[in-house]
Image 1 (spheres, rainbow over the protein chains, first blue to last red):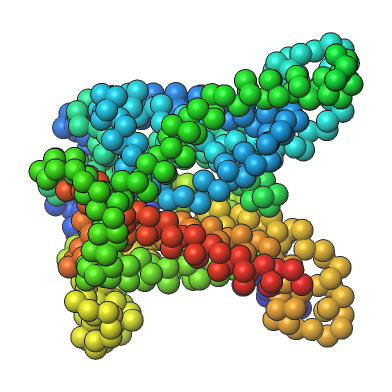
Image 2 (cartoon, rainbow over the protein chains, first blue to last red):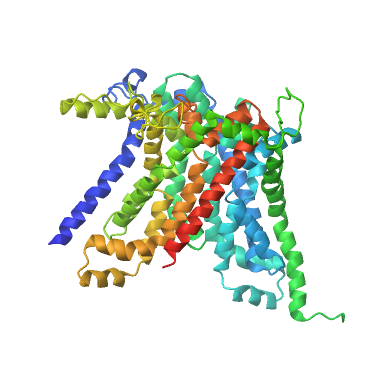
Length: 271
Length: 326
């Protein structure tokens, strides 16, 4: 008797929250399809549909260029970060060496340091190296991650040590153990880190904001910011740009949910 | 002394060389872009270094620290940063509620989970620009809905001015640290907190709670129910203690993130205003370092922020761990 009522109440609660989550997105999509004067009116549906708003975004700002920059930079950082993190995680999780735990603790401790503390010296370093306002300056400092090393170490610790030993008895060197034994087994962890990194870089704001001066090097978040501040109140076009900004994220999320949910839980619970 | 190594030793030696090679790329990056800069920034905080070089460089000792501690602006920004932490317990409680609803074995749960996770996954500049439009007091849908509700109930309550208002639900004064009745209301800081809860409530914390809830042994709550415990008692005495390690982790991470937060919101939505009420320490550091190029002073502020994060973590650790280990 009580059970069905409870079930109905839970569904009601869940649906209410889901609606709250969805309404802003719905407004965004509808506003992006309205003529400008209607954005500020309360009719939820446009009286005339203007899908060409999306085309206009590309005419007013180099939006395709921003897309390319964001994806290009994110792809490089994701690749480099996964590679360097995998190798370091292997050293921490599978090899015995003096000082290992000390160095690992040092890595962990830096996770607590606010990003802005290192941001200022890194900026002056970029100035000195003359890579301010360049792809290199955007990519290289972001290619090393203590968090990634930590996440993959946790993952590699769950792989049975008997596997490395068996490979070693068969005469495999360290590199072969790493490449042929551990890497394939750590693939779910690497994919998780890859998604995190890609998402994080795709949305990253602070570093590109201070580093990039040229319009053609702007990433999506920076391009969006200047579109919003410089092109006045074209809310419909700005919403169209916002929709296009988040679509890749939604696609990534829907295709990778399984890995993400596991990765988030692994990174924390076993910490 | 003998030239022969025991097999274990040989292995260890080989491991050390291999480990060095495997670690090298990451460790170089770590030294150049993380640990090196940390030390460098501490040193910079004791200088008057300015990138525009308007004044000759010199060591100034604790001058920057003295200056910021005496600066009323710094006090306001510290208060703002603390104010934004008020959203934290609400967001965490919300995440727990959602996780508890999702942990019931009902049909279609994955769809709900996906929808709840959507804002946190797509969060960033695009969504902040969206919320700026939603909060627009004249044309935005948020006030349109409030006006519609108050109008149909024949209430004469003015809708909040959101991002344009210095008011806040605690009635904090702007010029000095304290309470003043005319600041009581809903303003920019609350708007940012509401947006933050909307963004985060269905995010990673909810997933963490969801995982923790599935690990709570079913028999425990069933046994408690058989003993006549009501739903609240089961939650308070069985579920909540089992969730303590997860809650601890979430609280620690939220403090660390919350204290350094607020930069994007300020840069994208409010420029730190009105009257500096949405300027957090992180945004303050940004303006000092990258708009005024006062590297020395900004480094000092960033070290104060670091000290706050460290202190918060230490306090959490001291009191949180006790709670966890029963």
